[in-house]
Image (cartoon, rainbow, N blue to C red; front, side, top):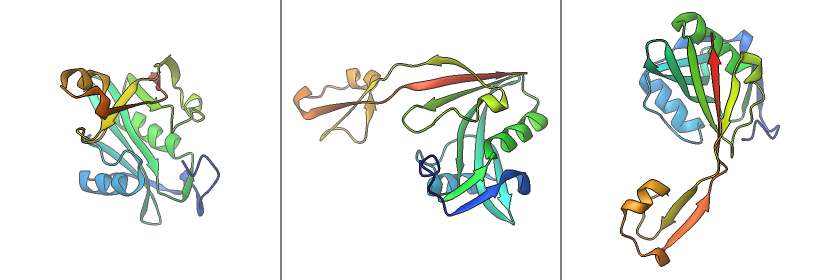
Length: 171
């Protein structure tokens, strides 16, 4: 978020960095420390290193055959890694040779600026949906789970997200 507002302490060109596949532990630690959504559970994990320091991560899910989904991408907090998305994605394309890659972005946090540059096309904008929280709910739950719980409606609060933009890349 701070990068989109122009607040960062260090700017690095991704072209001056080295890309490596990283371990699940490295990926989870980096995402927990730097990503608004925390760690994920996927196994294709790419890291961008600047002088030996991990400064950006992108993770992928292998859906089937040559279809994949990007699940996480983030740069280190207070760093602006120029073109990190492009460099990590191009490495992924060259190494894994996918025919199709999909991506969903939460409209609250992400803009779509670099996606056109790496060949993604917007295919859908999902409408905002409600999330619920309250004294008998541990965290936020979505509409589907809310209906299955027997909660007193007066003890439940509802907030709306901003929806998601869905994108696809095709070879």
